[in-house]
Amino acid sequence: MAQLLDLPPELLLRISSLLTTPELGCFRRSCRLVEKSLFKDFAREFFTKRQFMLEHVSLEALVGIANHPTLSTFLSEVIIGLQKLPYDSHFRTEGSRRYREAGYMSRNLLLQTGVAHSMLVEAFSKLPNLKTIGLRDYDGAGRVRDGKHALWRSYGWSFGQPAVSLEMPFPPISRADTVTPDSTFGSLLHAIGCAKARPQSLQVILRRRSRLTPVSFDLFTSRLCSTIDSALAELKSLMLTIALDIDTYTSGAPWLEYNEENDTATAPLKKFLHHTRGLEMLRLNFDVNQFFAQRFLTWFGFSSIPGSLKSTLIPGVTLNSLTSLELGMLTVVPETLVQIILRFDLVSLSLWKVTLEVPDLNDLHVYPDAWATFCDTLASTLSSSTRLNRIFIGMINQCAWIKTSVPWERMIEPVHFAADGNRNNRQLANLSGKVTYSASFKSSAKIWLQEIAKCTIGNDHNDMKVGFDEEDES
Image 1 (cartoon, helix red, strand yellow):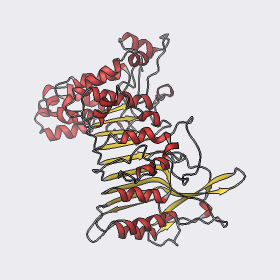
Image 2: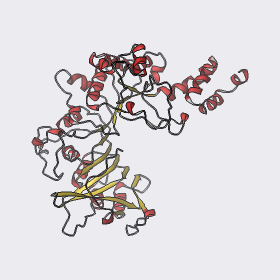
Image 3: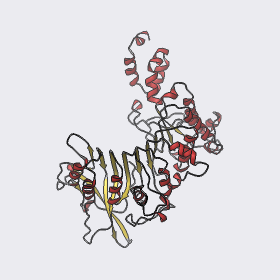
């Protein structure tokens, strides 16, 4: 031990990096001097960003960290996972019996009594460096210390299990159940407001079937308005995953004339964005199989200048500080997308799994080159003084409607990019699913878009599909 203590802190840290989490715990407890040497790096790795569930055992850990004089200063990102623990009210399972013996409430009782809200408020009010609050329905990768498949799971996920592995690809089926994000989203914002916390980033990243729905944003009642507004007041970054639920899903082609009076589904989201006036970065992921995105983005592209919107039920949103826009998993007509990009003084633009829609195919069923036209149009309409210096486009499609016995079907065609710039070279090795632009000396976004327009590869009807895209989250 004496020889170990003679090592410089850098070597102790290197040794600790080769240990698994349980081994690291034993190493830290071996000696007070070792623990002191490793503490800051240990805290940065395990307490800068943590994920919790709305379960008693998990929230107790969050409150404990918030009340710790040192660890509370490290925690800058709190993620609330939508997973829920299995609970048997008759205590027939080992996990439920252990839960009761430990003195923890069931999830339902925790929420119904308001204890969950109180614990969140206490924790958020005592984290001085809290910058990011998120909502997720999955576990994060990258826990390389415990193996290449190890995940960062919500605290308490293994409670009551005699033996677990951090490298399990998925939790047991009973623990893979998640709750819907609608009520959780509102509860989270209410707790942030009551705690007088001022996060700079709010991230809702949902990769399973759950999505925020319009009702998720219907928060500005007389009793909640001031609290929710204060929670959103200093947001700089906002990431949302949105879709209509099955009961409110409506079909219809996205090019139909915009009518805000009949577009009630998007109203709550529009009102919500009016309370995020300081946004610098906005990411919106939708459902590519719904036209909710087209309805909302039509409004989003309108200027907030009075008279610029056909219907002024909800004026266009003013986001003067917005410089980064990321749109994903949506179907939209090209004109709407161009209008949005031109409206804001963007520095960065990302389009991921975006499908451009054209009204219909001609009698020969020949696609127009929608993405080539889009890139050309955007290049020609961008201001010569544009600040746009980063663009990412990936996994894109174009589609159109044809009349059949259904009576309408949507024809979907993937679009690729020719790596060598020759769109006639359709060899697999020459096809790329994504392109990236980063400004450099003597380059411009306008010139790059013109070049990309010349190397888009569509019009391959062997790849044409009938129906809807497979759902996949960015």
